[in-house]
Length: 417
Image (cartoon, rainbow, N blue to C red; front, side, top):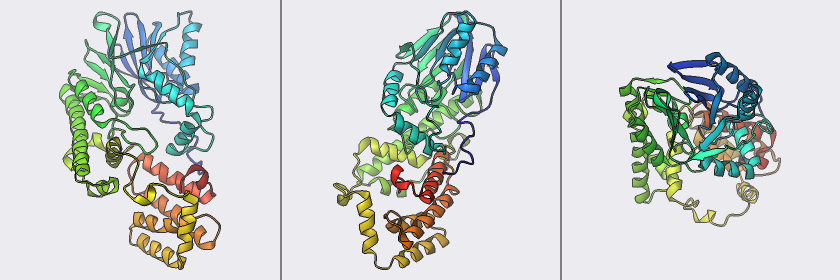
């Protein structure tokens, strides 16, 4: 696999802190963590990925305040955001302080149990999605459990320094936000990013589109004058906060309605993807740009939430092994050169995706026959071309890593066919 960028920091947004209101600070690490100075001590949301990054986060906090750590909170249960928890606990112990509370939403425990059970799968998916070399995450995915959990709202502190941890199901069902009622500052965590909501990513389990819209509308109803994103610039001004959150929720509800309309007409997943056009008034605004996810991902997630796995083709109900299918299709094609010539012609016309569909007639077969090898080479090149045509970070990486695997002959092991 291409390792040119493999060792670059993983979702690291920088270092240091930024004060957004008295006693309320962005703490940069894996995404934007958050620090609240309360009358009972410091409340830190997300401890970072561990190692030098987390150490830098600890040092940055100590430039802000010498107050004891009161609580370390999980913004959500995704791997990496709280890998640095032991370093913060050790820091508190070195200062002679009692162990801080380690707080998360109650659903985090269930998520961590699933991640432990599927550890090798999670590791491999992360390597592909984030374009890292095989084995990169072998020692980079520690899981640490909270010591206490809550359901809806948990208040910490009193008076003007009181903050609330609020359940904000969105990217995960265990996501939380932090709200400062006195200063009307919201830290949105995973529910609030500077991109289209991260729903339906190709490797991940279902994410509830309507629930995310519900969360954004609930957060908009708080009346925040500042909203800090997990990634991206802070939203400044009550009207702007309300506009961004309400607009995003409206776009998500529009997607749900459009997909449901198509399903009720009998359309399958691919037919829906071909039909839906995303209106600029909803999807052309800066905070809905598809820089990480993509609106078509959301369409697929909504479709999957109401349908089974069947693609409506009876042939796929009880399929033969993929290797056997690929070989049988290749054997059935008497003029393999014609397939390659037609695929090349499509690519020359700029119809790269169609060229991929055609070349797969040969590229998925086994063996080292010259036409099969050529098909794989062509496919790898066109995958790289597709990577340059899409905005989504995830799509680009999946295309590029798949091309790497094809060129190195490792596609069968990782099911990148």
